[in-house]
Every structure is written in structure tokens, then in C-alpha cells.
Length: 213
Image (cartoon, rainbow, N blue to C red; front, side, top):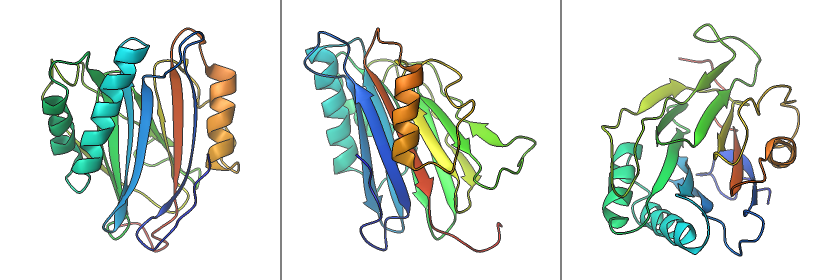
């Protein structure tokens, strides 16, 4: 499911790969990619457990994200928290890639892992990548205090979100010359646990060709 920019507002190329737990008809791992103003909202949602109830909670979260997509990441998660009361709940990570500012703002609750891989291979802030620091909790029942982080980004930087159906260390050995869809497929094939729903979303930033601020 590879996507390329469809208008001037969308500044990424992205791909997603997912599998439901064997024996289940529905997956509780869902995603949203939505152009907003001068950038794009990217989110991955993991309904707790698996099966129909996890899928329902995840769909409710995605619907809330759709309705309020123009809000910043922390208020978005708070919107989802209110919408999911009475459901099984979800864990989730949300990012906004803003083209004019050449920035990424991200925040997460629970164990949807987030990585930002620098496209030029250079170490920024002492490392060639950044990891999303998520807070423990459950969106829908136990929401922690949220602390979004803002990072500068440049053309070619690659964001990866992966649910806990993907083993840790999935980014080792990745060739960033591959397309986002190829990377998502590769991660799922090589690192999917097979014991839970699994989803990988890869988004490459295409906007902002000027010098980093």
C-alpha cells in the first residue's frame, strides 16, 4: 500500500504493512495518514489484546483522530482518550510532520515504537537516529501526562512506527535507499512475531530542501 504525494499539502511518501494474529478475522492494529494544512498527520494505534474488541477500540481511536486531525498531537491523544472510555482502550503514537517549519512533533502512550532515521546518514544530537520516548498508560482508561517532543527534520528523513507485534531491533541493517513500502514489508517479514497483530508504518519526509535551522 505505497502512497505518494497527492497535493502540495502532503509532504511524505509512505507505506504500511500489517497482519492480524493468525486465526483472527480483524486486526486491532490500525493507522492513519492524513494531510493537514502545511504538513501531514501520521498515527499508529494498537487496540489492547486482539480480535473484535481490540479492532473496535482501534477504529474508534482512528475515527477520533480523523475528526480532530488539525489539533496538535497531545490534544489529539486526549480526544482519543475521551472517545475510548468504556472500550478496551489502545496504545498509540502520533506524529505531525510540518513542511514549512521542517519539523516533526511526536508523542506516544504505550508500546508503539517510534524511530526517526536521518536520511543523510549524519549523526545529529550524537546519533544517526532518534527514538520516541513513550509514556506508560492506556488511552481510554489510564492517560499519563503527555510531553510531545519537537525535532528538526530534513528531506529524506524516515519515520517508522511499529506495534508490539514487531520484534525490537527491527531497524538494524535497513537500507534507506529502499522505498517506504519496501521497508515496511521487509520489517514485517523479518521481525513479525506471529503471536499478535502487527503493523509497521514507514513515512519518508520529502519537503524542506533548504539548510537545517
